[in-house]
Image (cartoon, rainbow, N blue to C red; front, side, top):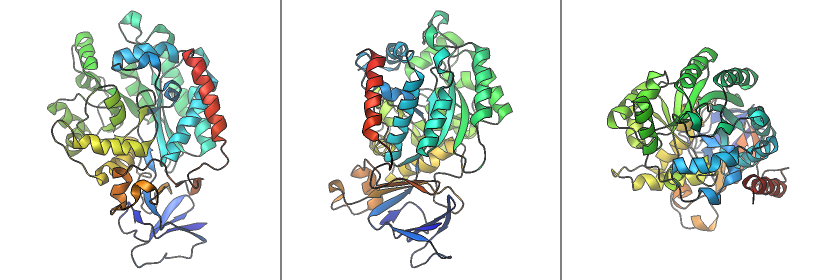
Amino acid sequence: MRIWIKDPLAILAEGATRGVVVENGRIAELVPAGGQPQLPVDSRFDAGSHVVLPGLVNSHHHFYQTLTRACRTALDKELFPWLTSLYEVWAGLTPDAIATSSRLALCELLLSGCTTAADHHYIFNDRLAEALDLQADAAAEIGMRVTLTRGSMDLSQKDGGLPPDSVVQPLDTILAHSEAVVGRWHDPAPLSMVQVALAPTSPFSVTPELLRESAALAGRLGVRLHTHLAETRDETRFCLDRFGKRPFDYLQDLGWIGPNAWFAHGIWFDDAEVARLGAAGAGIAHCPASNMLLASGFCRTIELEAAGAAIGLAVDGSASNDCSSLIAEARLALLLNRVAPHGYRVSHRDVLRWATEGSARCLGREDIGRLAPGCAADLALFRMDDIQFAGADDPLAALLLAGATRADRVMVAGRWLVEDGAIPGLDLPALMARQRDLARHLVGA
């Protein structure tokens, strides 16, 4: 089937004023102003009331945290006390909780225009050995692309780390399972639906051995690396006290700073580290809502991008956001960068680039995040006839400035997964009810 997404109100692509043609899960051609498709089409979708974007790409998430939104014990805390208040809660996760929360998080993202999501799952115990399998199954059921990162922790409180013993694993167990997950799920081919990265969780929850061995394993298996880095001042103090180095230097010495790695947050880099990270071609998943809610600080997005780093956009965990809307995150990113400490200013196009091409670059993908011939037919369409858009002049700018919250249509791999603002065939109320039951049981309410 050749489908012409025809005559959009606005589109985030050069030379596509009259839309795009989709065929066999790819963008077949762009239709310029005054033009027609080069070959006959089988169907047309009139996008005259829509702004058309490449499918948004979420570069960092924790699906399971949708179960602990606005958790009473974690309110009004910075990262370290926030984590310690939640680790014991998350230790009670079950396979059903992982499966349900993954489905719900993916649906929430999809409805916000997101077509690819990277998830960082790092809570493992005897019950949760198949956590990434459950996530892959959820993504396949819904139809979204995912990068699943095998998180890990092996430095518990008794050894000077932050997490309790109940959520850490031995080094050998982590490495063996990481290799097995990559073998089972990672598909490096263009347009793949599932890829895997290795993701020791943070400098304060893993040993140097785990970081070093994970980097070596990722190199041998040909997969990417991911972790939290430079998120808070507490992290910097921890690394200086324990390792005698700042977090950046610590990870660089262990083989982590390079073009095959991307990092969540990236707030507390000094000037030299910004330049070094950019020169290395690494990526940063910018998480504005989480950074604000946990009072972590401001990511130096403009300087990092100017230095050569990839800047992606991410919702982070839904226990520190506390939602999973990537289009809402884009608006926050725009506003936050307008009030940054050093007066940085970005445009709506910059932020939309971070949410598409930038995030795709963080994930090491050139086949998503762009509306270009040969790229994935992943699109997000937003209507401009809601009340907040009445009187808007520039539709692309209005998408963020007036605050779009929900996509009207979303296509992944040439298939409509969202139609008229809903996911066909999904009993969303039932999924939400199950999520609420599991959340209440998890937090002991």
